[in-house]
Length: 355
Image (cartoon, rainbow, N blue to C red; front, side, top):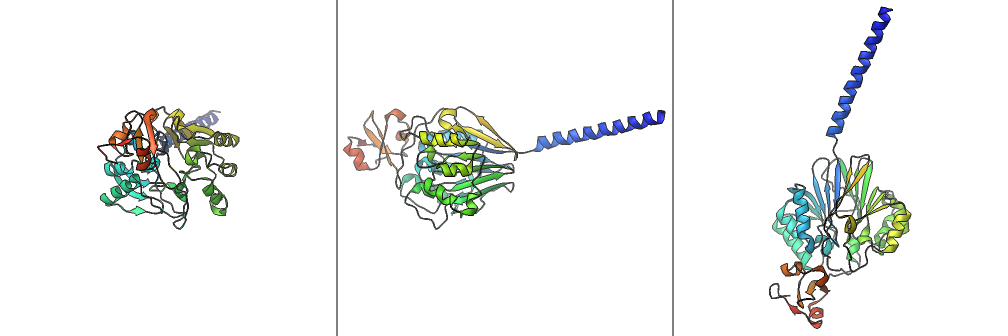
């Protein structure tokens, strides 16, 4: 009898010891488990995404418009960023690359990726000059290439191919599929329905579309997000980077309706500020932090940008990069495609930037 009691006590002691060791292991694992953090920065009418990987690498996708310079720089500095291991300029529109020159100048930068297309805007020229002055090389990625600086995270280019030719600069947007463990993000840049259809018709690429998070193409305009495409992606969360009361009506009501029809929770920077999503490789969590809505970026057309900004109060016009242009109140901003258009509207050139 006493022997049996002794054996039982021994067994209980062993089991308790095993449970204690297991709990310590679980706590240790939880403490060392690292996350992927994806922040959709509130830059007004534009795009800027910061990805911080489990191994401490930093990836910046776009930089927002000129008007959001301080917002982007302050955000990066608030995260303690010293080096950007990978920088991606999805396509050469000012509302996506407006601050790339300043960022490349102010931070240590590793690889720089951009699509195989050029334009003659000041923003793009400043970007190229910054890359050259820093002694960096501009790399053109290919479909299927993994550009991730972190071995635990995949960042696969789905579009465009180096040989692709499009009339719309938006369709040159670098489309990225980001994967960490069982979680995934699909970042569409400003890609339109033309690119969505192309991805759907490629058997291999179509299988890669399903994602937990979708960065909705072209600020949620009616020119992106077809029902067929959204059905293939089936996102739990749809992030729209857009400026409050923007002059384009983004996001379009039809796009919002289609996103809701596939069960996506819609997250908007104009309503919720900077949106940060984290992943431990198994599940994702959304943290929405309010921030001041930034002024609007100039409109962009299919092949060119509005290079001049006018002040309806002073009747002066400036280059979009001019210091004085950045100080114009949003409700006083007027955009012009050409110098002639500004002059014919009764505006006089700025004496500082001399447009």
